[in-house]
Length: 81
Image (cartoon, rainbow, N blue to C red; front, side, top):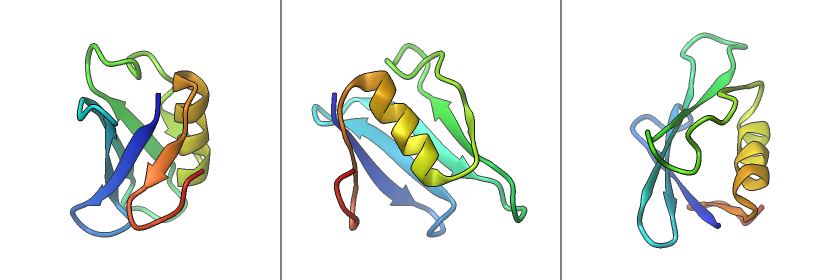
């Protein structure tokens, strides 16, 4: 399942996660504190429900989502992974 990753709010702080059918899968959030991890906040009942939530970088969070769903993450305004 491919995932569309769209920045929301303040750039570099939060991203929404949707599949290509428009179903909300959750969010990725970065702590406001330097050197804090990124957190995947899965939508309850989505295919991301139960995924490990803490990652040291956005890239590692996206890689975990790809592995879990067997697809790619497309960062809007970015590139395909």
